[in-house]
Amino acid sequence: MKQEAIQNFLNLPGLGGVALLNGRSRPYFHGFRQTLNDHQRKALAQGIQQVIDTTPTEFESFEFRFSDHQVYVYKLDYGMTLLVVVHPDQVLADSYAQIVAEVKDILKAEEERAIATFQTLAAQSMPSTPSGFTQSPITLIQPPDPTISLKEALSAMNHFSKLAAQYLGIIVVTNYWKTSRPEADWMQLFQVERSAEVIFLEPVAADALTLTPEQQELLQAWVAAFIKRCAQVIRDFPKRARQMPLSDRQKTILPPE
Image (cartoon, helix red, strand yellow):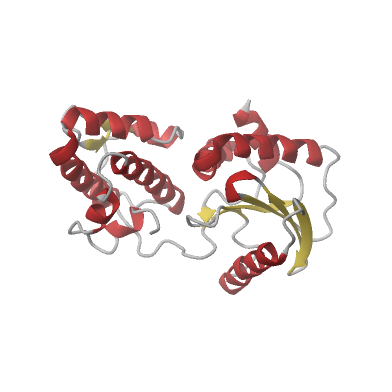
């Protein structure tokens, strides 16, 4: 099962972090926040790209040292790259090769949705992750800017609903939201009404709930998938969505250009 394979992967002894890059969207980094500071993370991001750009195409995997950590890089299909960071002086388990191979197969099968799928499965695996393993994704290049409340996020999403409904109708927009929603447990707390309005089911004041980086990434993945569906019919929908009257905080749930 996909869930079991990802959980086994994240529970590997010595695992310090995991990154996924595809050269188009924002890199996704899941791992120890305390392992590397902001400067080191930026340097690692630049180093990864330089290594990938200068490595012959026939090489499907390679490794290098960074800040006393061992870094393993695996080139996958569709321009996807899997990066694994191992803590200093840690010996990888004998099962490492097999577990990584299973994860690589999962990512290859997902094609365009590889990052979103891994992110969702990683979120579902978090309760059983080892002590000290961060439960928040880290973006290497563009960390989320200002903190956004759930109320602000919902307002932005419903702006997109109204925009799309002008061209596609309420029924189609409602279906697009439902079929593009990530499968993480937290995402099941959202409901799409018949009016195409997205609401949150928990009895809390939405404006009082500040999104964690992980929650913000999940909503961003949902918005990105919804906008992509709309763009199949309305080609300039991504541009129209960015032209909506949104605050700087609300714009953080938009996918990277």
